[in-house]
Image (cartoon, rainbow, N blue to C red):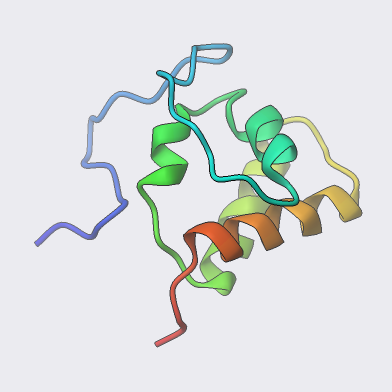
Length: 92
């Protein structure tokens, strides 16, 4: 069975600068940072469709920042806090 929020192998990933397909993120501190950072490489639907623990979001966020433009530590924490608050799930 496929995990929720995980794209299947071969699924299309947005190209850099691609539109976010009119996906709206919930309001909250960090929304703008997530829109600015994550939409550089991903359709925001990929973010909205995911539910992850704080540890999972932290691992993914740090991995993405290592691959793309660097972000100051305070912005990383803002992004992480937003993702966890809006798209988090309890640790198992």
